[in-house]
View 1 (spheres, rainbow, N blue to C red):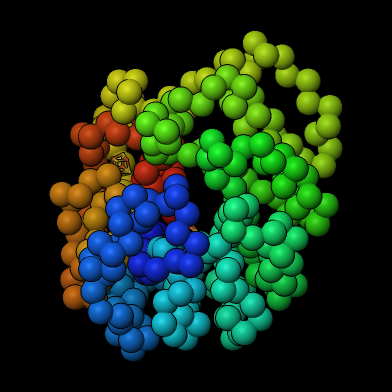
View 2 (view 1 turned 90 degrees about the vertical axis):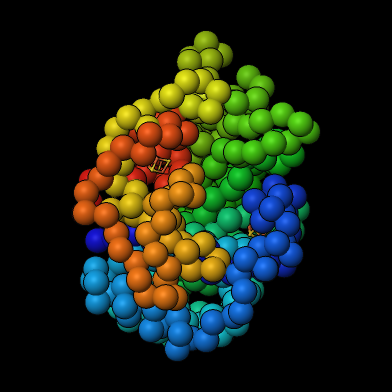
Length: 298
Ligand code: SF4
Ligand code: SF4
């Protein structure tokens, strides 16, 4: 089954300082996006993909996908033929927003942004989705400005059976590059939060053990070629990234590897994995495509 990561929306109510779109400029992203597509045009484009490759996994992201006009109808229609995962901040999610979506075909990946919403309100929305039968994963960005309360949020959500994953921040903050620049104390906090569950009060890892984890925070940009450019990668054959204007690329790190355009219905995936030669990912679980590229097609 193919996996497509698809930036559908160029808008978000939150405009977080650490968002890639904020860095790139929201106006620039809007220009790249161009005219809003109708549910008919989008459904037709994804039917074309179905005709070529069968049911696929579509990971919808943005911006905030729920800000896209007629989003509910778009999801209901494309999920008749594909499996859809929606990455969302939940700001626009209520019972009406997901009405008619099929929990067997649609799942959610919700990110909590502590400067924008109370944790209690976020939790209520996750619980609403779960009660409606949806899988809703939750994650939290370990941005240097929001590390302090991280474990408390995780502990709070765990009381309701919600497991919050911690995602490392990749980018520049205060002029220094992350995740390479987390301090040892920050790394300890992150590792503790990653491992924390309701039963983890007794975490007793020594400082020395935690120091061994420093390697987790190194990426090929600064630390040599890594394995990404050398090993065959199935980004391009079983995985692809779709930009706001519908342009399909092997992944976000390989702008020159064009595979067609979703809306022009001319996507051609490669037949087999090949090495990319870039070496920008730096580990076997390629960070660019969250591991899809490095895994065998399934
Ligand atoms: S909620 Fe997500 S999409 Fe919206 S501004 Fe923040 S990081 Fe970007
Ligand atoms: S190894 Fe990483 S950068 Fe290279 S093609 Fe695969 S996903 Fe893209």
